[in-house]
Amino acid sequence: MSGKLKIEIIDDKNVLEIFESEPGKLTFVMYPDDPKDDNILEVTTETSDFSSLLKRLLDITD
Image (cartoon, rainbow, N blue to C red; front, side, top):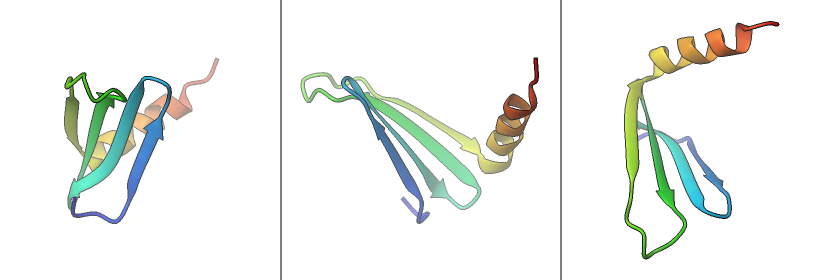
């Protein structure tokens, strides 16, 4: 993990980690909070692409 920011969101069943894996790229890793379950979902995206998507989602009005 090269960036300084790391966010962990933990609920009863899952853990979501968000961090800068390299300059200009965000990685999202989700896995169960159960050591017996080894399912992992990992997605890496350009920070600018994620930022644009987030802005569009937040600009949606009813």
